[in-house]
Amino acid sequence: MEQAARKGGRGWAALTVKETHDKVSMMTKPKSAKAKNGQAFLRRVCENPRYRGKHLIVVGRRVYVARTGAESSRLFDRVIRKHPGATPTLIYVPKAESLIL
Image 1 (tube, rainbow, N blue to C red):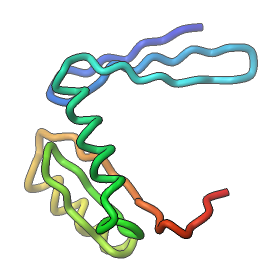
Image 2 (cartoon, one colour; image 1 turned 60 degrees about the vertical axis):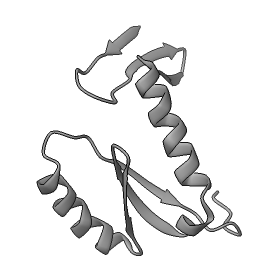
Image 3 (cartoon, helix red, strand yellow; image 1 turned 180 degrees about the vertical axis):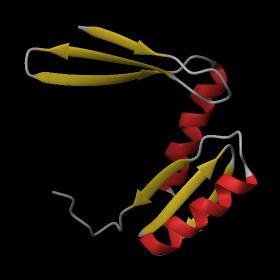
């Protein structure tokens, strides 16, 4: 079974879901050069040492930073009100010493 979901608007990528036996794999394909630049921007944000151990909300080229999960929840509500048509990206950047299992 194969499904493709497409959304109109800035910064959205086509999402293709392929089901193979018991495994489901998801692949994102950038739909434009703008989407590729957005992914490169997210990669640079995640690699920036000043954001380690923090929750981030990225809308376009703006980065909102929160220290705790509760603070990021309140910040998310404010960001949604400030940018009603945009789709925010929520990220937690672990500390360098953290091991995620």
